[in-house]
Amino acid sequence: MKAPAPSHLSRRRFLGAGLSGLALPFLPCRRLFAALPQKPPAKAVIQVWLWGGPSHLDTFDPKPEAGSDYCGPLNEPIATAADGMRLGQLLPQLAKQAQAFSLIRSMTHGINAHETASYVVQTGMKPGDGQVYPAVGAVVALKLAARHKSLIPPYVVLTKPLGRFSEAGFLGSRYKPYASGGDPNASVFAAEGIVCEGLTRERQERRRDLLAQLDTLGSRSPQPLFQAMDAGREEAYELILGEPGKVFDLALEKAAVRDRYGRTTFGQSCLAARRLIEQGVSYVSINDPGWDTHKQHFSIMNRKLPEFDTGLSALLEDLGQRGLLDQTVVWCCGEFGRTPRIQWDSPWNGGRGHYGHAFSALLAGGGFRGGQVIGATDPRGEEVIRDPVSPTDLIAAIYGRLGFSASDTLPHPQGLKIPLVPPRPVSSAPNPVNALT
Image 1 (tube, rainbow, N blue to C red):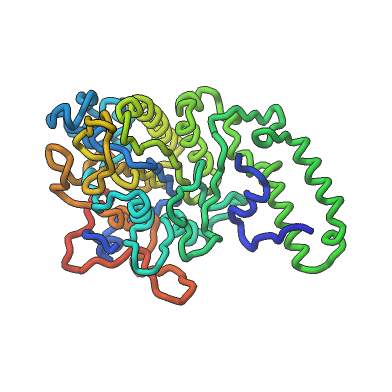
Image 2 (cartoon, rainbow, N blue to C red):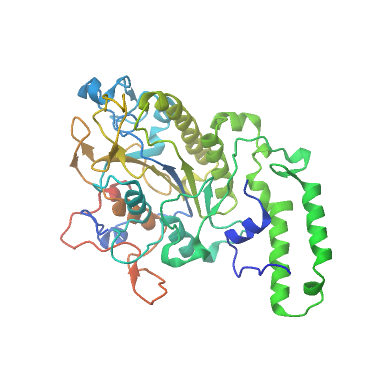
């Protein structure tokens, strides 16, 4: 008997198809949306999630004057195409693209635990009130559902689930992301008839035909349930064998384009994200693990930062050249930063710990101005000293660029009125991120 078809275009169809190998101290005020200029709203979001927490001193907020106990060997930051903005020395390609993005150097939430920090940065909500709030991707998929026309789910994660919390929260499994799985850097060639790793088109077609032969009950029944099952199955096979599923086949891109992104899992994930946005996906998360560098921090950075630099710079450049950057918000950060002072003693031997007091984020596209720096930390990168920005501030500004109203609420199974972001007292200072709109 065939499995029931879902009542919407969701991750379940992809799974069936087998495609995948705060109320914080600084909450945003409601007037932040009304203050936005009359720009066309953004249509999509790409989130670059640096899972584990990158060091702000080695990336977006270098402090060479702090000395070797803070900078280690990465003590030669580089100038960028934006006046007054420096980046870590292992990010030369992003330095050339600095007019396309802005930096927030004053992110803060004070949380040093992965699970809680991830939840706060991904949802903008403080835990502990009995609610399980949805991540930004689920909210965007909900709010932009009316204009989603593709068979591809509106919320996609490349390649592993974000983990540590339920991305859909109380919105339910309908808004859980589809995680692509596999490695986009693997060689999968459409010309050879390969559908996904280890499965040829011919074999998949034989599976479909055999299933149809065995399904004698459903094929003879006029019942709406069986008809819905048939429709769901056909859409699933359309994703595998038809045009929509080709979005994941990076072999269809020119070799020079793939080389520009870097032949790494992260680089090819950035390329896949661009392809998904072109196909009308509303929210793509690139989940890049490996940033939790308690030990061997600098040897890991010597590998990860060049990969990150190549992939993200290519993504920004490619989106710009294709006319997609103005309508696509790109935001990049981890759940927190890392300790500014290097832990040289055993057993860390040159590592950095968790650090939620001060960290950085990159924001580009979607109507946000580039070439700017928001906020500042002290000379050692240990404390925010100007324009603190909470995850809620950042998320609220992104919602604003997507055209969401401050008065909007989220549907709740118990009928509670849950705002997109918690309101800030009217007397509070404006959201610093709005300076970029």
